[in-house]
Image 1 (cartoon, rainbow, N blue to C red):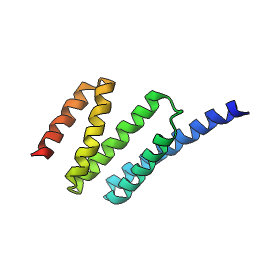
Image 2 (spheres, helix red, strand yellow):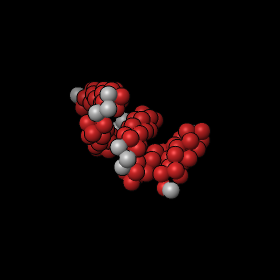
Image 3 (cartoon, rainbow, N blue to C red):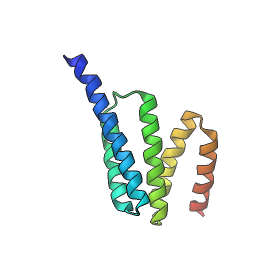
Image 4 (cartoon, rainbow, N blue to C red):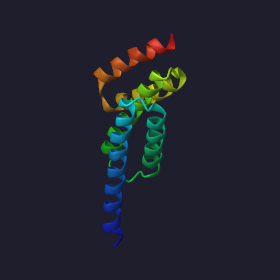
Length: 114
């Protein structure tokens, strides 16, 4: 019975975070950025507490969530938070080998530092 519950729980977590991402993007697109931040943070809490999901799936979620957080904080001129989430995103992109996205983000981060 436990073997049956774990995949279902993983599915539920993946679905919840996927829906959270879609809603966060909608909130961002409709300029409700503070709600988008709150929702992304809740998704991050779920992902950090549930490490039984495949590494690749978690990585994709973290990339998406950190990208949204970086964008939102840039929009509201909270550059210290934008840099925080941008640096987290850079680390994941480096581990993933996504050099093009990493280099574009590095340039954006450089402009925030100066």
